[in-house]
Image (cartoon, rainbow, N blue to C red; front, side):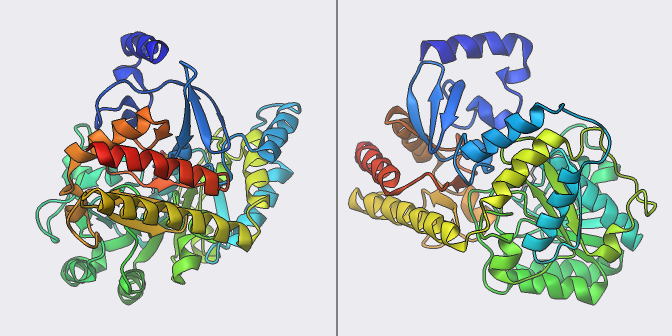
Length: 426
Ligand code: PMP
């Protein structure tokens, strides 16, 4: 680990915390983050040459596995024609058509450069369209780092937002109402009190930022109904779930259609891309057709579009998803069985190719409170044990795990062999 240690020490002198995104710094698990030199399929290699089975997959984009040959070739070809024009290209049109065809509720789409931009823009559009200021989000859901979304819950469902980050003015945070995930009554109560002022509900249709928590039956349907009753917009943040929990995302998997959808990660094939879109009636309110301003110098970048299109083209096949889902289930079941064998309380959640492992006595984890009550000390030990064994999990217990097409039966078996040893040592 010499090289990663050296690089981390050096990085901290000129990069805050040594990293360009906080979770990478290993603060939650301790120790030295691994500096990565290359990735291929289910694997990544660190600067010291150690190989790991990777369940982070760049935090979700790599549903086809790392270094997919078709995506790589598409990027090389596009780059040969120039990196950015700041003018429209055919690739953007094809991308919009493809997204509209794949994601059930999306009639129109605008490309951006990150998930944060997608959610920030969708919120602005919802506010502009409804002429209302307040938004509802869920405790434990992450939607990027735009000011109004960096608000976590107070103690009760009706509590007004308090800034969870210095730098977010209270005057911004007060428009964000935070309620409990998977608790439709907490949403109803808020709407009964101030529904006429609420522009939108934004939700991760499968929560992937408080570990992995799928929606309980009726939750997403309930949100749809409340939004319809009060004239608010329902926004699905499918930055993680889009093209991952099914070809058409969570809205296809759970058969609930939002008004607006945010996309990121998979849609860029690994390049920095996001998108937001939805009903034509709403999308025509953004500039230049409407008054809600939204723009981007590098939006729809030709190299990024080429990568994204090469990814989406390979995701047309329903059998491909069935295969990845089966491996994800096998992995989660394997973890549960091995933990049981070693007498370690563990619960797992699975949604398509996303999974979560919770060190807890609870038989079912469906909310933020349960997620944060898990045994983080045990997770840390498990984390470092797995890392030592060559398995790279997300370096924090509140993150979902991701399985790709390249995680075949032998990769899953090798992971479970490692887990058997590590559970045995806890
Ligand atoms: N929404 C969700 C559901 C996410 O998981 C993330 C990032 N993990 C974002 C938004 C923000 O995306 P980005 O990091 O690309 O800004």
